[in-house]
Image (cartoon, rainbow, N blue to C red; front, side):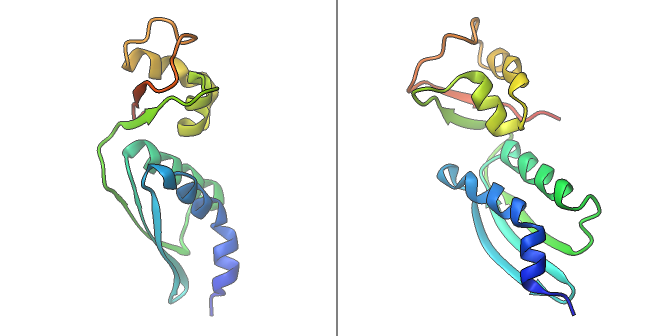
Length: 130
């Protein structure tokens, strides 16, 4: 018999990734045992966030054979994001892609000529990368 607490621990990075985007609308709706698998039901606001969740799943277990997931993208591909005081495009890139060096993709997608010149309060769209 599968152990719920053990599976929750194994996939804790996935759960915390979803919860980490809660301010953008991501939500864990269920974490329960379904036979021998952990059933994880959640919603995420964009393909960008969904890709980060998939990265966390593959990091926990590339085969994820003990995970039954229902993760629904309730938005589109891009993720709207409002620049906060102290943000840089590198910081935004790290948050959404796990890689600070992809800031040029965000700058290009938003027509930002100088990635070092972003204003707090401005809303940008973080593109989904394939």
